[in-house]
Amino acid sequence: MARLTTEERQKTIIDEALNIIHERGYEALSIRELANRVKISEPAIYRHFLNKEDIILGILSRISDFDQELIKSVNKKDSPLEKLNEFIKFHFSFLEKNKQMTSVIFAEEIFTQSNILKEKLLKILKHRKMLIVDIIESAKSDNKIKEVDSTELSKIIIGTIRMSVLEWKLGNFSYSLIESGNKIIKNLEKLIFN
Image 1 (tube, rainbow, N blue to C red):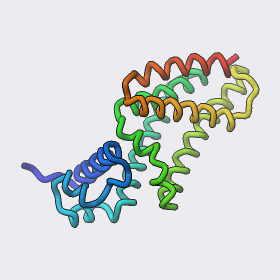
Image 2 (spheres, helix red, strand yellow):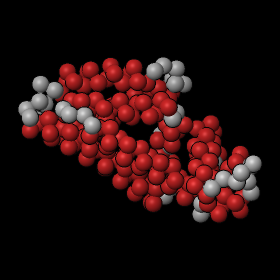
Image 3 (cartoon, rainbow, N blue to C red):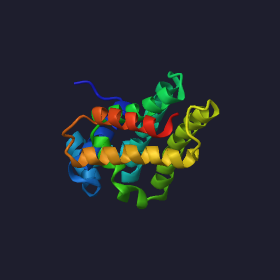
Image 4 (cartoon, rainbow, N blue to C red):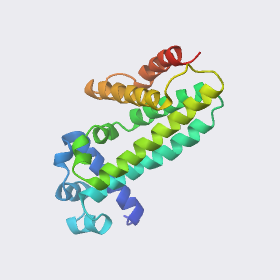
């Protein structure tokens, strides 16, 4: 069996960390448990990551990579309405394919214990909020959207996404998040677009 590259091993460790958090919660994540699941020694884990916080930073880096794909996808759309729809659909589609990511998103205790993790998450949230604000401002300049505070509306949109994902997670992922998202998009269109 061929040895994994450093990058492949790190990906495997992060994938397994996500699985542990998803199955048993953040408190269950330990280097010992990770080593058992990945079938390597604890010191081998430490060759790839400094500590548990560093592993969570790896997960947040994966979320940052998602943001780059999100921007590309949104920017392929022409109108502000299409861009906003894509922003929402892209989140739901990603999370439907990566259910374990919801367990990290809603594990707020992860981010309250570490200033480094908190700052990284805040940077991600600020980036997403600014992307929505830019879409809203573009729509306002084209008179396509009602006169609203762009920053506050961005919070409403992100909050709507978050609430929808939480309900889906608490419902044991028993329905299509994408279909639910399409209903949300239609209602948002009615509420904010002229």
